[in-house]
Amino acid sequence: LCINESVLKLKSLTLINEKCLDLQKQKKEKKTTKEKRQKTACGCSFLQHDRVECLSNDILSDVQDIEDVVKLGRELNTCPYYATRAAIAAAHLVVLPYQTLMHKSTREACGIEMRDNVVIIDEAHNLPDAICAMHSNEINGNQLIDSYGQLSRYHEKYKARLTAKNLLAIKQLLDVQINLIKTLCSQENLSTIYDSEKWSNLVVSSNKTETSSTFDLIDYLSDAGIYVNLFQLIDYIKTNEITKKLHGFMSKYPVNKNHISEEKKTNESALQKLLQKQAQKQSQPNVLDEEQLKTTEQRISNSFAIFAKFLEALTNPRDDGKIILIMKETLGQCSIKYFALKTSSFFHDMVNEARSVIVADHIVPADNVLAIALPSGPQNIEFEFTAVNRSNTAMMDELGRVVVSLCSTIPDGLVVFFCSYDHLQKTYTYFEKTFVLNKILAKKKIFMEPKRSSDVDTILTNYTKSIKSGTGGLLFSIVGGKMSEGINFSDELARCVCIVGMPYPNIGSAEMVEKMRYLDSMKLKSTTAGETAGRAYYENTCWKAINQSIGRAIRHRGDYACLLLIDKRYSKANIPSKLPHWLANSFHQMKNFNETSNALQQFFVRRSNKPTSS
Image (cartoon, rainbow, N blue to C red):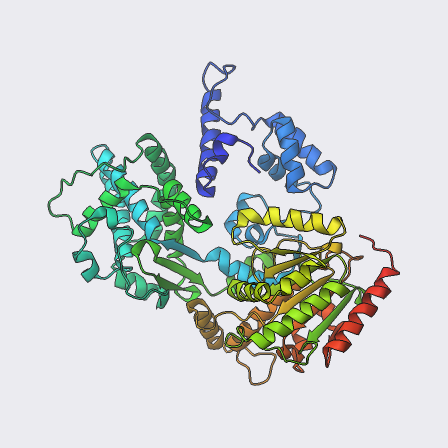
């Protein structure tokens, strides 16, 4: 909601918040001087009480979304954020993201009062995982290296001016950073490193693939040699605005990549010398893809802010989460993750304070949707897209025949979701090799989910144009990818959604292992006989991903679409119980493809005689 370009350019949310507060302090100080009417660069020109009140009234006068509020704010040169906060008290309905609703400190900062209010949670199947995600935290080796370098340079520059108390706190922070880094590389690795320019690329694992190990929080801190009071260090960072000071310091004294730090302490460890050299280097790598770009921006702008947030995660109760060390080939690629397990405590305050909490379900008339489990294709070849079978050419040929047939039956837009990008890429390449794509192109234009988030809007725009023009479109996408959540394929954009295979998560991942173990330890009862709570969570994670994908198609009461679950495992007797209520009553397990094709044709003939309303 911020419209101050000088603040927005900071990119990091932490730095934006601190800069905003800093501008307000400067403004208050300016008002105490005699030169009240003089215009200066300090203070935020968008935060004027009378204009904020005016914008607040405009917000309350009509239903507005974020884009509308920002547009009004720009027109009135007034802060949309503080105008929105001012409007909350008088509003009858306030729409919030999970991150605001379920994070107590954020809720309080925004002025959101739970007491005596009714809370309605939409798409609540996402809530437990969303809470875990917002309270989990991760920092990589590069960010640790850079945050240490920034703080050590600051310490070297100002140590003569700092009080004994401040010096102690900074030295403790530096020790914590060093000890965290040591958990990512063995002492043998460290003793052989002498060239600081190769620090980020230090090989710490001979294994080319990612490996992970899990630790109890207290055991990890003990093994790392971190015994200081982390609560006091966090309070020191906040009270003294260390993140903001370091950002200002790095802006005032930018790092020269050719500069070599003066190593005055002869008794410094080789690791500490190495890190100080690396911190002063901080050269930007060639940005080859979105992942590298994101990492580079974080390293340059807010490494210490990321470290400070991670430090807060380390103060959580012992039983609320685990520490996961994610090891890759080089130190810079490795990371330390705090993985939150316990979500019940975050519900507690909200449920106790609110007058009522309503979990809302999707509502779709039975006539508006047709869901079909498709176990086989036109030639009765069964589908079972497990990891072992995904390269089976007979199944890919059969899938190709199904997709070509659907392109003839389905009007407008057809979206086909695969369980992974690798599966999609292999299938697409095979379709190209066997001329299946040519057959599809004769009926619909083909689009594929991009790897880069920046390309999503372009793909969606072109896909929409193709459908609106009458050409039709086929979009290959990924379950849990960039287009399976948050993007609406309403009306003609998706008259049919197909799920190829079952998107089970990696049962061997450290996060999944710990989550299943935690749920099993709680001795919770599963709804399925003989199934542990951990196994039920694993199954439900798969179905949550499926429901997110198919939920993109039906977006209002007059919308309609058909859903195809392409895999013989969808024909099991317990499958209807896994589906959301709005879909279960319209679910059919067909015996063969002919039955499916006939049902689809009848569905669209029937729907063509009914008007579409929003």
